[in-house]
Amino acid sequence: MSAAPQADSTILIIDDNADTIRLLSAMVRGQARVLFATSGAAGIDIARLQRPQLILLDVEMAGMDGFAVCDVIRSDPALRSSAIIFVTAQSTPEAEIACLDAGAVDFIPKPLNAAVVQARVRTHLRLQAALATLDGLAHQDGMTGLFNRRHFDNQLATEFARHRRHRMPLGLALVDVDHFKLYNDRYGHQQGDVCLQQVAGAIREGARRPGELAARYGGEEFVVLLPNTDHDGLLTYGDWLCRRIAALNIAHPTAPTAPFVTASVGLCSVLPEEGDTAEALLHTADMALYEAKRAGRNRSVV
Ligand code: GH3
Ligand code: MG
Ligand code: MG
Ligand code: MG
Ligand code: MG
Image 1 (spheres, rainbow, N blue to C red):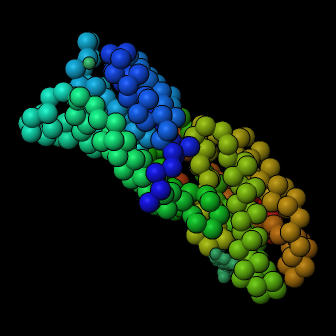
Image 2 (tube, rainbow, N blue to C red):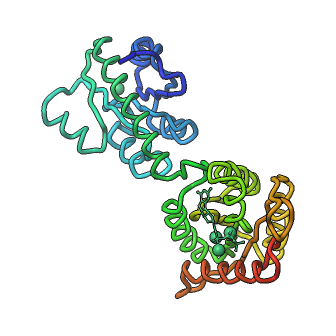
Image 3 (tube, protein in one colour):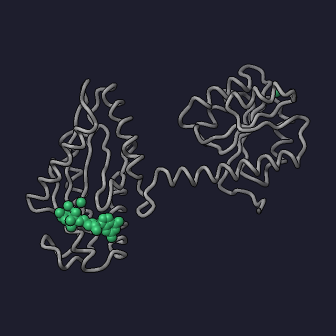
């Protein structure tokens, strides 16, 4: 296997000794972009901003020691994908076990040996890349690049609970391509896939605000989570999305609605109360979608 540097990877070194930082940086510089911090607190701040793939963490530090830093990082969901390797002079079996039990993936002994450091880092960068690939497969829809149904269902549950706690309205849009069976019949399934990719692109474009999330719900149906969106916001969004999809101008000569691909959108929003469920929100959006279809398609209904 190649030992080429992972140009898109970042390693964060957290150590209170400038000489150790210099030494470690020189050893791993060829393998990734290298950042450093000279205290635990500063290291945590940098980790949150930069999301490094690997953190090389000194155990004995003035102030916050390595274990305390590890605790904070391991309990921050945003840093779930940063792996920690402890660097320490305490090379007893007990010390090594304590590092792994704290949630680190590995342990590098001091005094530092360049070849050992590089081999450990290389291995973990490779594992991190594989995990990132798996993470993508687990959460994304392969054909459109949007999030998949599983990820959406999880996020919906989380967001629903969060909006209930903060008393904020949560909006939802269900999008269904009109007369798509006829499109496949006319152009074939492969061209149908290309059409869905284009529609997905338009949906992604309309879901760029923080917290908005677009997913493929299944087949030719998509779903968009619209945090803090009230009734007027839904009207505007639904109208925009229908126009945007029509404006893709994908020829569909056999469709009774229009000679181009259109979609229908069902929207709703709730201020979740105790006892309300995310399923009810989906059901209401589904009824609005049904109404949009019934009323002639290529439209949105709130
Ligand atoms: P309506 O306007 O009522 O939604 O009509 P429709 O034809 O879009 O709805 P229907 O549910 O009858 O058909 C959906 C079609 O979508 C049938 C199915 O073959 C097609 N489809 C579902 N998933 C995919 C996919 O991944 N790729 C392609 N090419 N077609 C798909
Ligand atoms: Mg130290
Ligand atoms: Mg459908
Ligand atoms: Mg249908
Ligand atoms: Mg359809």
